Image 1 (tube, one colour):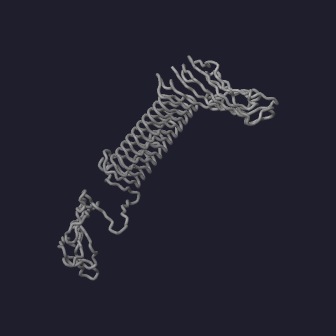
Image 2 (cartoon, rainbow, N blue to C red):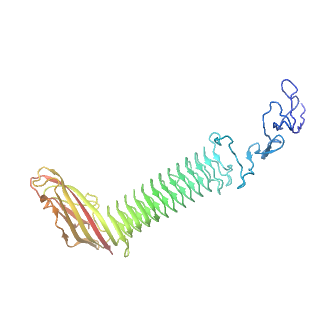
Image 3 (cartoon, one colour):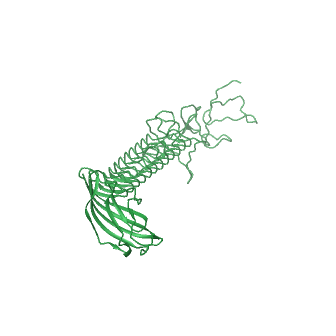
Amino acid sequence: MKKTDLYLKPGTYIKSSTTSGEVQGISLENFVVSVLNNPTCCPKPPGSPDGMLMTALPLNLTLQTVTDFVGNNSAIQLSTLRLGIRSDSSVTTQVSSVIQATTTNSNLVIAPNGTGALIANIPDGTATGGNARGIDAVDLQMSRTLNTQVAGRDYSVIAGGQNNLVGGVASAKWSGILAGRGNSVLGNFDGIIAGDANTTNLSGSYNVIGGGLSNAVSGSAAYSGVFSGSSNIASSNHSVVSGGQSNTASTNTHATVVGGSSNTSSGQNSVSGGLSNTASGLRSVSFGESNTNSASYSFGIGYRTTGYLYGQFQAGSGFFTANSDAQQSLLTARREAILTTGGTAVLSLDGTGVTNLIIPTGTNRMWNVTIKYVAVVTTITGTATGVTVGDTKSQNIEIGFKKLGGVSSLVGGGSFSIPQEDASMGSASLIPTAGASQELALTFTAPTFAGGGSVTCRVVAKVELVEVAY
């Protein structure tokens, strides 16, 4: 059969001359018929669809405007591979192409096929379109300087911004970036809300950065976050920097910096805030400026103080030449012991009587010491004639104590208040001395009694220090 070009002007159509409906001898290859039901111009061919729009030319790789049957342009452009939409001239504020649902209260669905991603640029491996996106990823970011700055991991999201990256080697699944510039999410289940040049780490997960500049969740930290500020770092598990500048929550877990600048919380469950404070002790707290709390459970406030004793609360407003050379401190010493008549037990800051003794730091330090203690009998085993459970004694003691050239000693004989005591506790006492480890030793002596039994005593002493060092 000879192939013959067939040209139909608008308003004409092909009608079969056979009962079978076949058009004999005519091939419609690469020819597209435009049809519009317009009785005035040209009657609708029988059986043809209403309002059909088609290109007047064969489709190729170039987008071509779709026209109606009488040659009116539509908003749609087609090629063999793509669908385009021309701008809407009725939108005057900004050049815009519009896709609008016309049914009242209807959804607008853009549905990728299978595990395809929903993206705003065509991936081309360059900075223009970026690398391939992850499975079921959503990437609406339209500007980047590197091809890797995409939602490149599975189930990841970049909602907008510029030069943002959700990536990492087999990592960053289920992670996302909401906005901002130059942010990088590298761990699983991580998120960055906004900001500039913020980063979550590759080997951690469940981390978040709220915003700010150059903040990081680094190392192998997990469940951690930085919420604002600049140049802050959270590098241990369950650690937080709330804001500020150049703060670090690191080393041990559950560390927190509440704000300020150049603070470090490195002790487990430690907290710091202000300027240049360090909370490195277990569950230590350091607020103010240039304070250091290296001892467990210590708490420091003010300016240039040091918490070097277990459970120490220290405060100050300045210094001579070094931290802690002009400060005041508060300690709590304790001990529970089973004692026979006149037996002794040494108090310590952790209650063991062996560790965490009350030892001045450094070589040359002087203390003005006020001790307020209370002792009580909690249990009697066997016979302790004259002693009753609940018998108690309390007393205040004032002494001087110094460590000079590394050797500690009492200064003067001290001052003892009139004790408040039950009759059986008259022979009980608490005596301060300089111990073998250069500590301020607080030795409790049980009451004397007959019967050969024993008593369990609990003793607690509040120790107030005024400290000066050189």
